[in-house]
Image (tube, rainbow over all chains, first blue to last red; front, top):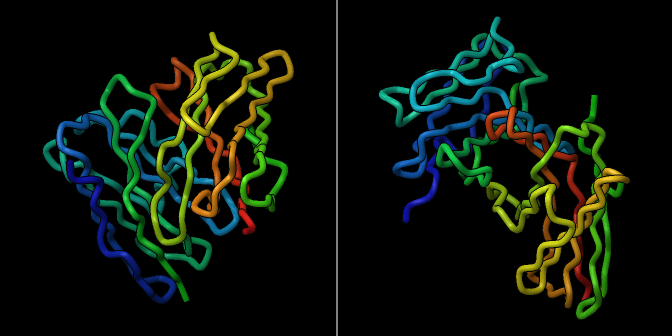
Length: 113
Length: 113
């Protein structure tokens, strides 16, 4: 079974530029999550999708971050414009709609200079 | 507001001995707890979980203990092996939280030969 795929793996941008991350969840997983993990901290949920609907985006900085889940499968997370404090690893995870166990992708390490 | 806390940033254990990782939580509504393991440049992988209706769950060398009155859980690894060296995250969820996970800061475990 293929795992959660993410791209790119690494990205370096200057502040005020925009960036987008892509995630392909495990086939058949209805729920998709985007997390931000700052160095030395645990993952923090940014947004949760159930199929193509948003379940929770309470911690998403909506003035600069946006996310969508196309046709209930792939998802993209965008930051525009980026700030220095956005430097982090962005993790995508997926799960079935009845399980607490989430399966994570390898993450995208973003550096904002 | 740190609802899930791992107060030990790092732990060093000799190979073959027991590793004990601790986690405290403040939200009494949490009813499901998970441990994840993370290697460098990889996403977290699910290790073991426990429901609040239990006080112990065992899977091979890994055992999780839950003390609801103290709002404390621990992960025991016996015997510890070099491949167990990783960062371990504790996570908690509520039924009402729609599978949303709240993570601790992580503990870096190093197994010494």
